Image (cartoon, rainbow, N blue to C red):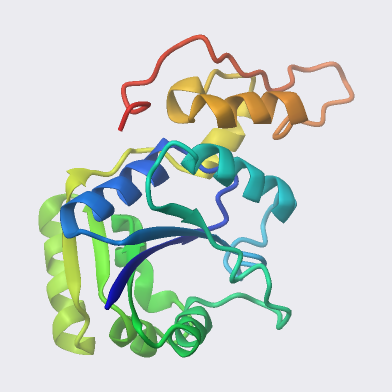
Length: 222
């Protein structure tokens, strides 16, 4: 049976932490493919404007180009039924590809908050989860034990430290004119600069976001 790891999110923008988790899942557990699946209308992220899906997809294509068996999936973007909930996505994926075994790749912060998701009882039983550490290990271990005992969830640990970075932090730093080149693939950094994305709207003459791509990142060659 084909084994596919799903990386979901807005990817606004995709960053090196996303790629590191995907590579660890692929290599450590022998995933046949890793699908990067951008969300259309994430119900928990309505506090800011989301970059158009075509541009988010283009950044993903640029980011995953060097990685074998990394694919862009527009499965959620193709839906037209309002909010994109993980519970619905997993159900529809299993219906569309019944011969594929799906795994959902998460950061530690999502594991800590997963009971707040829509239909967590279904989500936690639908597929196995792969999770990397960011929270203190004892806190994450306790949460995983609780979810396994309460919902019958299945977790596989990714033996890498999750990068302490988020897309929201990158957007904020760009708007403040800070350099974020160590957090992004060079091709994504170039795309953001060329398309002038995530620049602060400041009519009073304040700084707009700039992007320096000269520095190398320790995560670039993961």
